[in-house]
Image: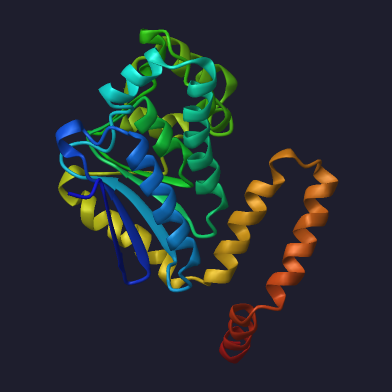
Length: 252
């Protein structure tokens, strides 16, 4: 049985973590498969968005027991190599040109919460649970911190990573970690409707917008404006923009 199920339909690539008996816990194989699937989605010109979800009752509970055992028995260099693999996944999510969306139900804990946080957008069911409990076992959610600080205030980030408690979908929404909270009964259809909206937009405009947004992370104000002007000029030359202007002018 494949640990990652990949389907592409109506412009949406869906990546389903398929280890329900392990609460979709991350291991080397699953992380590798996620990277491969994301690269494939990135190359597919018919894909407008990618969704990461979990099979069964949970999104992802973090690293599995065998991975934790491996961490405890490995050398510093071996652990660094292992951490690099997860780092590559987090970077890849930002480099994939289309929006990458986490559809979270059940538990998203530790590395699973990190995976959701790393996505461009997070959709959550009302009863979903989030948390970074790493400090409880002497671990540090170190790489996730780089993403978390870009999503919430410094004091909120400090609280979430040092206290290690769980928090609800509504709390995650209030923190700025979740884009939408949907009722459990309509979660699947609400996610489909939300994601389908990207297929009705200009693909090139969304791709350029994502690229520019993350490029601006370390830029000065003036550099960001200059880069924005350059992307603006590129966008004007795309077929989508030319057709959009033509359609708008005809309406006017």
